[in-house]
Length: 473
Ligand code: F6P
Ligand code: MG
Image (cartoon, rainbow, N blue to C red; front, top):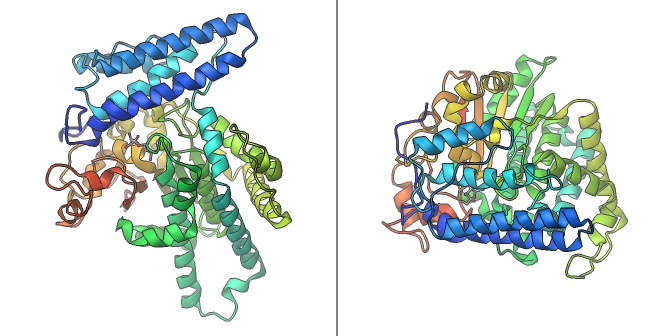
């Protein structure tokens, strides 16, 4: 079912696949081992501690195999139905080794394998080895969270008082709405720049710099494909034509913490502006690519907002304390919490996990592998795919010519699929499509752009693409 264009391989020395396999994955596995050591150290139940140590040993073996370019071994059966398909594909791919394997397959396999260690245990089922890291990074997003909460509350209150449209013509109102839509989408887009699998060594200050409103303004010209206009037209048309009908928007989530927070900002805006009547969120079933959202991350986020004072001022692991929030800051965050909880309770904000999202394949396979999910997405007005991995899966992480139209590169998810796709992605991998002729060449000539050898400009999250495909047209 996959396209013919070849995929990126960890053996392509000039690709980010190679950097990932040689440098990033060992660091990620080491981080997981460190986390387990800390947790096991606090366990009082001997049996559980003993089992914890045996899980550490499995991680150590994995790291050894990875660093010594051993073959990927078949996954142990943890009772879930996707295991057979991972193992069948491993065989079909000729039992490759870590440094010469399709990047997308190997990276999914890596996270799925870690999951088997916990799923097959007695005491550690459901343990999230990245949980500690996700939580502490979210705490460091405090300034950006407070800034956005204040902005959002102000907007919501203006909207409720009718202040936004006071004395304005219909065109001016529409123009203002279009701008606001873009602002909300850009907040949501750049929230993807800080995922934890890539940015393994970010300081508190680095994170804050990446997330503020100034950073967003500075980055506007870095959106090299921008189909937000077309997406807005579609949403507006749906609102006009189905005024009293159901208008659902889906968000295939990426990272938890700050990115999930901005996804919810967008969701809240779409619901309160009437551009959508319900939002379906798609999280992952298991810990995935370090920071991806699981259902527990979603509830942890909401819980942190019930009492923001306690959450943000508790001393962190290094013992560092933080100044208290002002009364207004607390009220801003609680305003969001109240609105989101109400949407959730009213069934307007729904979480819908599906095992397809953590399978190894690209989304070209969806109609065959998960036909019911494919049908379900047709019910939506717009399906928003967040982040780099979703983009790689939409395009099969293949070596497309960068001028290939997005609608071609997403195959069965494209024209006539019945699904409207909108991808929000900060570029953190080599694959990119939909660029005007000459753009890739131009970006390669920038300092750190990679020149003729590599597409390095696309590895760091500095550049972004927003690509739309109207599969209902
Ligand atoms: O490129 C680095 C990387 O870890 C990719 O392997 C992966 O596609 C991506 O980052 C994860 O990023 P995101 O959270 O945006 O999907
Ligand atoms: Mg991610």
